Length: 368
Image 1 (cartoon, rainbow, N blue to C red):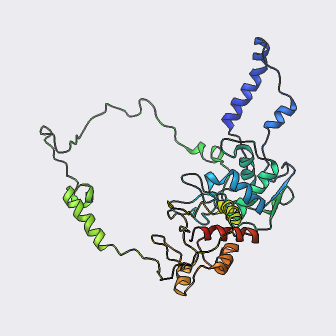
Image 2 (image 1 turned 90 degrees about the horizontal axis):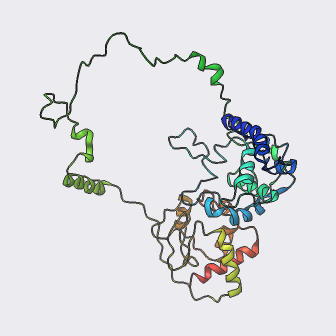
């Protein structure tokens, strides 16, 4: 629910009340027209009853999100760098470090719509059409597994979506229920008689103190209080005792033969790869990210990129002899979750056969 802080509302009302008189006195300005006020009056009611006309589906939202939002929030709303994550975090609110996203924390869908419409994209607020906003919000919902991939968000379907944390917020009624029970603090003349100092504690190091406070023990200080040599020894011992990091199953596969390429299709695939590049890299300077690098993926045994921590289902598939050829890659790219249950890849898949074909050709060009 979009709420205006009370102190800001009071200040705004005061400013609006004083403005006409000030303008008249100085001979400046005029009263805002109804149309001008309406242009700034964008609040969306929690029930969505004053939503604008329009609609947006999940897949249109994916495209708009990729163009307008992904640079900060990631291709799949998973966040990029230090920018906020918009998806994930289910059942983490009771954790020490909860992940607060639209799917886990936000209570009202109206807040999501209002914020995107009013403030996004960063640096270009107000440039999205209402249809774009509907589509982006639909895609955010889909990224949080709250709607199916054929969902269309509109004023008519808005109330069909209830966010998981809708009941997680309560009305702040402390002024009525608690403030009256608080004890007033004494600010002056609170204690009868003069204040008397009864004890002074001085830590070791002051030869004039006459008092020796107990030093902090090495056990409490740990390596922070140890000598550099001792700290180094501790680190070496920890390194020796630490279990070796699990490595991916590595299979020996013959290098693929040189493949003929359709350069036009490669170019199209490079554009489609924008959907993938938030997690996967290709090229000479490619490094593992959220997903493994895809250089040489054609003909490569699954789960064999050095330094990448694969999911258990992917490692199981690797042990079963999975090799990435055109058939296997096509199935995986079209619907990763259906192809491999439990995969870490959050991407919903490429719904158009032509996009799959283009991506495959692009990956072939990086597998020569």
